[in-house]
Length: 110
Ligand code: HEC
Image (cartoon, rainbow, N blue to C red):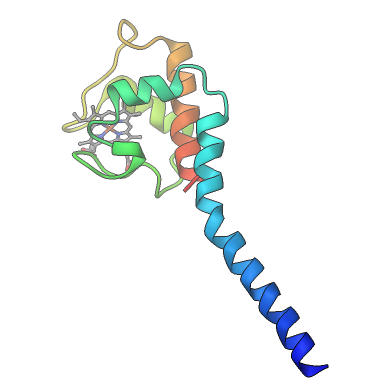
């Protein structure tokens, strides 16, 4: 009797730990599959060089703090310090909305 419940417990613990391990992978898949319109593409084109995958690079990490969409959009439009501004002729308002949604999702998927 003892050994059966010990075995059951072992199975439970194994199941739990493997579920926990797979969470970040699921998160990344969710980012890859959710629809951001152009967000993913725009990020790869304009942001990835300094914020690789949302991590810190030449710029700070974007995925480790709750940046409000309005702040993300303001920063992109106006730039700050070493970060260039991306004006309407480079990035439409629609693209900027989708980009902000993508940046927020990078944090949520972390
Ligand atoms: C040439 C490098 C460069 C590029 C390209 C760049 N950034 Fe940045 N980014 C920076 C730097 C440097 C900072 C920090 C600015 C400061 O505080 O002086 C920053 C800061 C930010 C912040 C504020 C982060 C915080 O911790 O407050 C956001 C949001 C951001 N960038 C988003 C973006 C997005 C979205 C793009 C693409 C449109 C982008 N950046 C493109 C260099 C870059």
